[in-house]
Image (cartoon, rainbow, N blue to C red):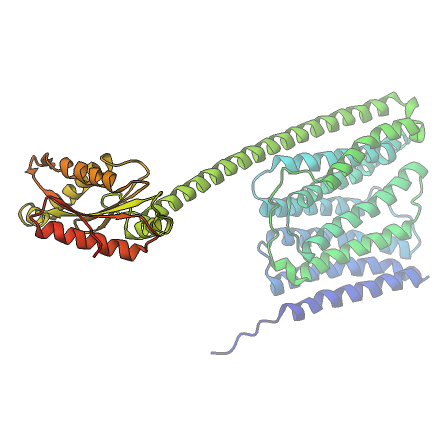
Length: 513
């Protein structure tokens, strides 16, 4: 099997640059040449686009070929119209108006509009009302300019019906293209170089049309015809370069915040709203003396203001939605923080407490003993009791370990009910427990031991109705001087052993040798 060679993006981009260089050379020749043959150069520029678009689609494979096919189809009649126009210019003859060239031009504009609509629908997906409203405001704003400088002067001219209709068709077609271009620009987020070239094609085309038809309508002569011709050539070459650029193969991303209104966009929209009043105030072309024109401008201003109000309503709704989302996120964050805090408390509790009984474990007891026993003195004594259940093994052997666990939980409950809140009751493991008390002397510690022994006189009633009688043996150590926890536990354990060997169910106090 042969290897498939895929050119790198840098090498594929050479075609676009070479095409732009050739187009620039063509424009330079047009500007410096004085021969009438130069009027055929725009035909070459337009014809090159008809071939550049299929070549670019083959090389770069755009996500959708339909818009580009429509652009190429639109450039074909556009090229034919340029050829007709150019041949009349070469022969220094007057171009028929309206004629075949005008029909071809307007037909190409229809195909351009169809391609742009297809491209807009494929890149922005469903309708986004915020972007549509912005595009409508832009279209109406430039529509006021088009009416004041192109359409209204044509209506006041002495043209017959058919030439007048064709003359007005051009600015109307331009406004349609502008509307779709505005929607493309205002609803896309991350844009590619090919996208910018495509939008540039439209903007330059519309600017050249505006200059040509605006001066034609107001003065009767196309002032700066060469400037318009160069603009049309530049626009054609930009469309060809857009198809040849490798970025045409990358999809344009939809804007994340379509409902937002950046300050720059808001400034442009407000400036467009002010166009109409400025035209009336400046009395452009004596417009104040023309009630019909003033009425049209006022009507367009009313429609434009309505669109702006709707746009602000969308903006307010978007702000409210964002505030609600922010409030929800804040609540979720607060709930998460509370859950994390609760989880941290649970983990901390599990690290320092016995999972079965909920009592302190050996680690927590050691910490509290280190803190308490290091401060012990005759005026601040402490006491340590170590407990071991008598007969607990028989309960496990006869009733099973679940019953033994249940008994340990009940024992923990009885122990905590017989001591103060600040005292520490800990489970050391198995059936061994410990009690650390602060601020008690030996006599009070003895009372603690007797109270605990007394709590074991009543039977323990388990879930299945079993009555269990167990007792406990206690080893006590009264502490009146700074002592280590290991020493205190050792002494209490010696006392516990004495209580066990003396017959169980009793308390024994440690006596220093």
